[in-house]
Image (tube, rainbow, N blue to C red):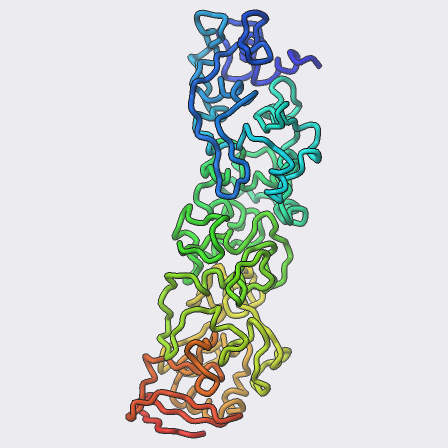
Length: 543
């Protein structure tokens, strides 16, 4: 097929016979709009249009290795129509522009880029082996299919992806968009081959809104990159995302209309991670511990590497985290390392619900395996005698953050909803109820969180502590009054006074008449307390 024959049926046929809305009123010649045989512009090939004189704002991103400048080469030729500053019929060998039908003298609609190119795929930069090496997620130039073409200077231009004359694909693309075949020629994202956004056959159930915004493709895998990104005229230029509000890009599918689980319903529960509280604050290049406190889906999930069928507690694939040492790591190996990005050294943390005798609000320090006491999240516990544990748990078991912080409708909690600490009907995004209000009558439901691992029967038989039943049932004292569920840091506590997660709630437990407020561990199931609680003065009260 000749170039002219290919153009004839494309939107680049601006003649009166053209198939698009932008077409000439009378001009029948097709090539006339871009090329002339004589007195052409110095720009090849026999260019008929004046050069744009615009100054463009190029694409930029904190994660982009390439730094595009002003458009060059064939891209500036394309922009002579597509930036909208020059009339479509303006050619250099005519005194007056070619008259267009319907008054559509300039580019409009989806083809209009304007002069602000921050919301368009970057162009006019050298796509070199050095660039690909620095990025780590770009194909080497030699590995790119011949269907995509860099220009003679090795630069990526509009014509790398678009064939201006002849293409069997929509928008004059050189390769199909289905399955994002054209995208993955260059973009080789770590984990993409096993990513559910690449493999899932899930389809839209037809309930509004349309997740794919009139895309011709009908499954997640067919849309692939287009589930979240489009290359031109995006709402959020730096990431070419469909929506400027970060979580809206996830909500398009994760509202129950495409993915099986309705995650957005969890975010609307009583307690949730506040993804809606900030917009355009999250940046993939930010430090692992950010000074601008926020949470977005991409803080915990890598959309290019997410995997279907993960077991509860599995670490999301290829996500950044913070190690117990405080060092930034990628990928995180343990789920708690992802949590520590915000719940460790992060500044501006919210005030804890419970005022404690030792009140350090840094879980990285509190979960250390050499802390005075800790729930076994970062390593097995040290207590060799915990008779209340429910099988298969034992003294060497390690649990995860999501064993306590999870949706109350999660499948692992007996519900039918999604896993993960997105939101819960219970405070602090807890998977089960955990009453902390003093004078709460003991019941399986009041302390369901604790009784998920610790046998209610064993606790009330005083198999762990000879005063459990008296405190919990006799005095209606919640577990939370004496026990700090995360742990106690070495910077404030010690193994003598803070073993067994003892860290008193100071709104309920006060110093005794001698001004003492302490627990003293004197050996297995042996100790003493100095405190004032429920009007009872404990002065070296031993058990």
